[in-house]
Image (cartoon, rainbow, N blue to C red; front, side, top):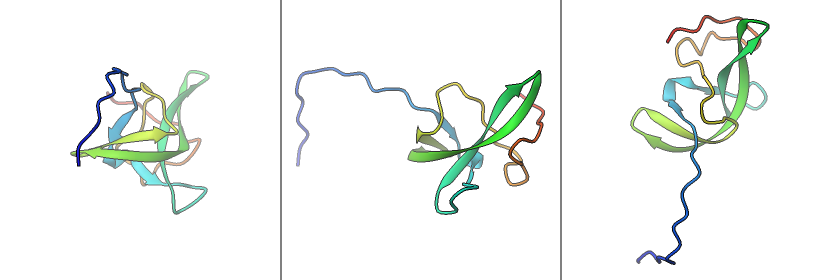
Amino acid sequence: MGSKNTGSSKLATPVPVIPLSAVVRSLHDPGRFAAFVVEDQGGRSVARSRDIQLGDTYGNQISVTQGLNVGERVISVGTTIATDGEQVQVME
């Protein structure tokens, strides 16, 4: 089997890549996955659970094909005790 090159050079659309430790089970469907996104609300950083669709893995990271945008901040430490709507402290 081979691959066919059509001569067109499309650039791939960038997708977010997050640590595997940021992936949790969805609050809405235990058969799906989610990540806690950090949102700014009135000067406070708040954790929001968001359902995601996973793509390829790259070592200890995984691409997200749906549910996150490039550049969004996700929680990668303490995800098992995070709560949707909870105020969080961002440590960079």
